[in-house]
Length: 493
Image (cartoon, rainbow, N blue to C red; front, side, top):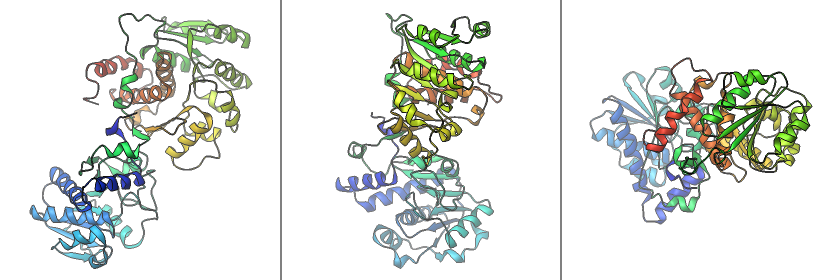
């Protein structure tokens, strides 16, 4: 998988990129100069000249701050550097850049805030391993309390570049400028919110270093999966586009939403196997779906005998009880594309090993945080790490839903989604997402790519709606999105 511009690099991988660039002839001082220049230019584009205070730490993040300070001062901005440690104690490139600074330097305990108009946070970068404390924390909190715009270099100090977690404290940035490629912490909460707008600046690291680093995590976007997104051809008929089957339950709305989404995303046919007495409800508002009564396991087995029903969904509106787990087992035993959502996941609470033993073919699970925790109470860590571990254990693609949805594959590939508006926190939106995954799988899109595409399209469709979004709105916005992707695959997204 390529999608180089969407690659997310861990802190360790970013250090490796720096080393690879230097091995290729780019000097470390040139990298630091370019980084500081990117910060200064980003500030000049967004703010008018004003007194700037640079909070400089003891490492390379502080060195970037010295460069930004020098370039802003050369452009006529009043700049003062407040240091956490005296400049003469710095080493390496940071010391070299500090030696080029001829402006005022004060201790971080001696800041006079009345004349400050903007703060550059150059204290600690993405690799920080201990909480932000003492004078550094006090200075950042003072800047926040005064409502000053804070421009963070790499990440706001205190945010983990790998997980987005906050180590003790981190300020709210008005802008974050990072370099070469984004990091997972720029997209994972709470780091994403604390970063504010993120600008990723080129600093002279050649893209070819990614071939050596081999990133396995990406920001979710069309470039990641567009090549495998199904597009009907002239010879296509409905069975070529797949026959999706949804096991409906007593709560009929969930299955109906999933069916609408699967049809809108392109499945050739959609059938619903439903409990006795509910067929009329399922059929009433979507006459294009096929509704089949399914009173018991024998009826389900008969329905599953048709091999053309190549993608199966169980869970939305399924209710509770042992029959849910039995239905999951029957559908997984076919070895066909399967999507497990909602009650189909909760049916295996505390017994993920049993579920893993049932999975026979390509499978996607779409739990929210509560469902995930019930299935995997022992998995700890950040969302990215937890999703990856769960996918590995299950041998299935896992979509850990949320504002920062993570899609993880059993082989460690992962994507982080960041286009979902808060309006998606509405009943039924998860059922729509499950239907989107189902519809793409029915068209034989690979499971990881199908899950990534479904999550992104789900968020993009919701983003086109005005306030007042409800789940029923999402499928109706898909045709326009799909048309835009076909005409102009990447631009505008």
